[in-house]
Image (cartoon, rainbow, N blue to C red; front, side, top):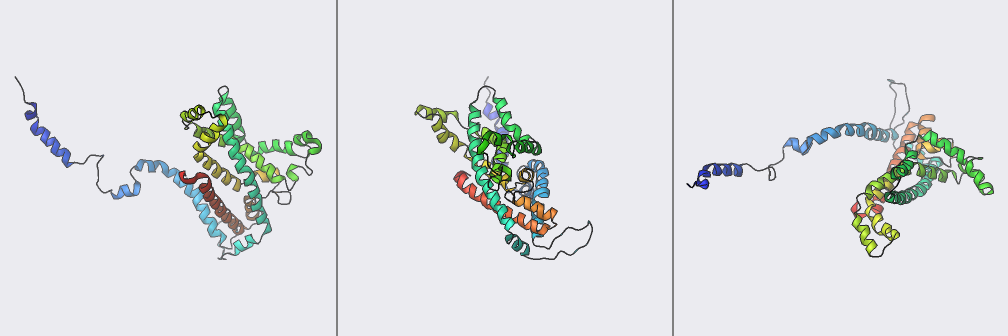
Length: 328
């Protein structure tokens, strides 16, 4: 006996088809977004997980910046908690005082010298060492950890080692003998900031090497094989494949090293006793500490900080355009 399955399933199939036609599927849902979806987005749970970090950013970064901008336009001074004091609006007087201060200009020149040495040196050494470490077969973990240890070491402990190396009677001067500079490295006006730049480059190198190592994992091995088939050696592979492929990582390294250098404080404070000799290693952040905390002029210190933020934002925009190009 033959059963007509089409006829038997007809009503049910028609009903299912009609129901399917009447209800839009999830893939073709063209309903207008509800107010909740417009506010919270398509994944409200993701916003919930991101909320603690957003609160952290607002409290630790955004609010202090806004308060510093407000403070820079006031005759602001510290007072006892709960005390009602008058802090009048003074306009751009604090900025005029900052621009007329030769120590401020010198601190910005000092950080400029630091960035000119530190940023290119960090990029070149990081990408070269990361490429070499990526090709290491034996003891790979040992070498990677060795480069990363200075980055996670306490600055005070590492600074003590560098003071021993670069002091007047330190190991470096003993090795150089008559070629040693006089005055010595950290008390020489011309060599203090370059020495600090070398120290910061060495200490932070491990972090930037890890960034490049992560980027190198995404470079297809076929590209190296293609260059090798065309007769290209290791040097051509490096400049034709590695450098262009890790361009986003290079932009990140440039931006991070610039921001770190612009916020330089600990190293000159510890290595040169607070920006010496004669302010040759003073930085804007060090001046902010001296003017705001030691001298009790937080309004002037806030004006220096706002100017530093504007400078760093300008440098970041320029670097994004020059290094990142269209892909950024």
